Image (cartoon, rainbow, N blue to C red; front, side, top):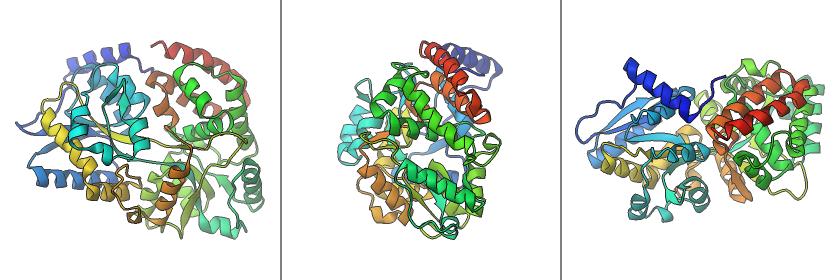
Length: 423
């Protein structure tokens, strides 16, 4: 398994440099270079449209270099190690930004934040959780997502389901009802590992709570603790009962989404970007699909919402830092840009001036759910360091392949994670 460490990244940077493939894109004077992972057909088109608005408003030209979502995770770290970052790049708030901040690769944006009066623009819960690292601002939250159980309305209606589950017992009962009707309850596409993380996130948060989970993410708790065993055992029960479509590790998240859209499965636990995907293939929000929050499992546990925050950051060695700061300020402050981008991405905007009515009915429900949550937690691979995330993501797919080896897997991961925290 490839392990992301600062040492391995430096080696990769040296090799890439020797091969002539690393380095920032050549920019004309006054241009701002940018790399991002918005490379899906809809996302790339929508991002370019918003960039064009910035260019028209300011006269500053942007030079883009999109990178595929999965490749970006390693690519940007290699470029950071090789000091060849673009002026601006998209990045996931949380442990990944913290990891790169600690390598002194990012430029603080406190002055820009103040001059653009972003305290009055960015929703405080998102600003507090996503933008501050080591006491300084480094990230503008371009959008955020919420992970929920998205389902095919016709499938549930045909199965006679009239009430959505709010508790774990009700969720199990729903699964059994669907199975009795010959319907696969849950689709999961974990080929790229990360889609499985939401099950771990919610089960741990709903049983051990946000404080314990934060300790595990920081290395102050162990993967063979009773709390982790209990959460994973609930997941194992679902797998043992056949609630998941078979061979989840052979599908990616869009395969799982397609199965739900076709009615081959009833639901999938996924981020709100699934709405952008489904809308793009003609499904109607609120008519063809909807969502419900992950059910309560244990009394007395704070209700947490899970999701990622996509942000924009500026590299420490940016060739055009002034232009980069203008870009971040514009992309965050312009409510029209934020509304259009959120609509295209199936995302929520952290700009408080975006009218909630611009969201479709499903996204309005997601925004309300996040607003009512007692905590907002970054999903697993953004909540812990990249080296540990590699260990955990591989754990999920190994577990899905063979749930019977749960105890063995957790003991091994406890050792591997402890070592990864030292990298």
